[in-house]
Image 1 (cartoon, rainbow, N blue to C red):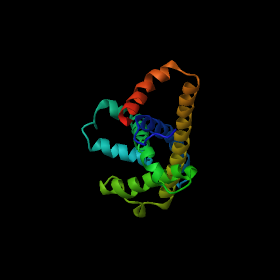
Image 2 (cartoon, rainbow, N blue to C red):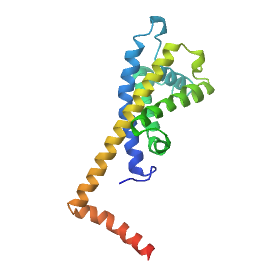
Image 3 (cartoon, one colour):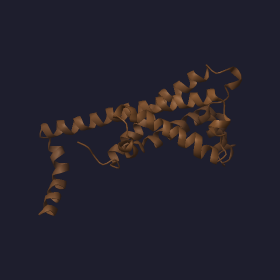
Image 4 (spheres, rainbow, N blue to C red):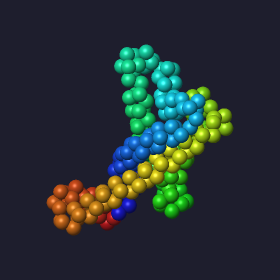
Length: 192
């Protein structure tokens, strides 16, 4: 049973999937950064972005933020992953690839829109062509991991939701009938 991509249930599921997908992405970034030469191992990009945003804001200098920079950076990274994940059900049907490749393609588009567009245009980080290739490859790999994890998690959450609906219908659940019967009656009245 397909629902409209803007349906609240889809947005929440995709946001949760984006949040969950940020964990393997973060691990990928951390492990891949250890493979780079020592001089190329500065703070990972999400941390650099968060630090710059905080330094440009009034939040910088507050003792709570300054005492926990790693936690603030991590929280911002996960919040961004969940927020961008919420957009997935809107864009996913328009990605002209088989379903299993749509998540990674979406992850690459997030990389391109972020690191090649809005982040350099706001003077946060330089564009990819002015950054070391190893850092770019690290970010590309991490966004592919994020997108693949997002797609898999989102589909799993969708299947689980659909299974619950089918089970409720098959069991003749009074809770399902009480929620959906009024909507069905309204549709029938409009049709007549």
